[in-house]
Amino acid sequence: MGAGWSTEEERQPLLGPGVGPAPGTVWRSREAAAAASGVPAAVPGPGRVYGRRWLVLLLFSLLGFAQGLVWNTWGPIQNSARQAYGFSSWDIALLVLWGPIGFLPCFAFMWLLDKRGLRVTVLLTSFLMVLGTGLRCIPVSDLMLKRRLIHGGQLLNGLAGPTVMNAAPFLSTTWFSADERATATAIASMLSYLGGACAFLVGPLVVPAPNGTSPLLASETSRTHIKDLIETVLYAEFGVVCLLFSATLAYFPPRPPLPPSVAAASQRLSYRRSFCRLLSNMRFLMIALAYAIPLGVFAGWSGVLDLILTPVHVSQVDAGWIGFWSIVGGCVVGIAMARFADFIRGMLKLILLLLFSGATLSSTWFTLTCLNSITHLPLTTVTLYASCILLGVFLNSSIPIFFELFVETVYPVPEGITCGVVTFLSNMFMGVLLFFLTFYHTELSWFNWCLPGSCLLSLLLILCFRESYDRLYLDVVVSV
Image 1 (spheres, rainbow, N blue to C red):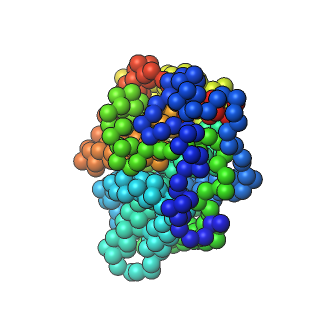
Image 2 (image 1 turned 60 degrees about the vertical axis):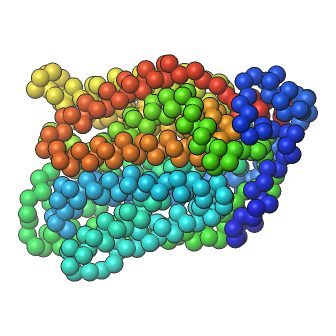
């Protein structure tokens, strides 16, 4: 398997209508689930996992890693890019903005995932990334044309975002058992952010700053040297994406021969009914805003971190390391938290409350530190590293926990549609902030204040949220 399009037969539920939830059913208790399913709790359900699931997870995760790396290519080296290609502040912000703009056709990718399956959607996504990274590498001497090609490449890479950010819960449900789902979701979703973190490391280490943190004009020789090093990074990213596309084309099955759990085999709502269910579910809308607002603000803030830290005399290399460790810390803790959630089920809300309490405190610390002339807090590399890393740890590690909570709350809505809606909202918040940033880039203190404000709002929404675990109850009842 792994070749060709998924068939209509493959997309049919592997359990009959008597096993698993009917469309529109929301499980409220184990007893209600058992009664509604018509299957006694003692009857074992399907649940076979395959070793190849880790290969599928690896390919998808590496694809997300590459997409995040390409998206964040320009933010960490914005001073160098200004000199090499004549980019303006608008260009730098727009290069980051192509990520959320790429989410505008997000619903089309969700429809494709629902109708054609995982393999076709992933192949299309990786092909868009090949086109995007290849477009940036076309050798032209006209700087205006080159800038347009770079913008076009970033847009195509942005179009790959909906799949790599939305399909992680769908993949984990399709391939992994109930006690591995959160871990698989965390790995698949966190690798995209890890790719963005590596851009903070690769860019500043390979490409030198033109003159400290100031984008002053240098000699023609220096400009040419910086341009050559930037193009070396672009060619390397193109090679990595081509390799991943080849591996995905050679092997990426749409689904396993047998489902790993009852939830994976059960009937789901249609595409249209799913949107009706989501838009009419106030609990889902509440928790979706709790995710979208702070994560959208943080993503936009991270994308222009170098620009934000330049006024406080932080070098391009230091800004890169701060961004790198803040995201890496979040990825490591996020996977650990997801593994903990797999062992201790039913604790997702409590985990989120703890994470966002820490995020609110650390973001407030960072904002007040940047206003040291008023607050008299010490503005040192240590305090900037500590506050940014803690903020990244708390916010990024919440992503897979949110994803699992979304799916549990609105089950049997398909995972791809559920996560697609919330990531679309998050990217829209990110896009709006970056749009305002292009007009108010000389005064960034308002952007820093958005961080603690959004984290506090999310904390209050999570506190008022009433959690439920509908998908988990189904697996526990039928698989016992």
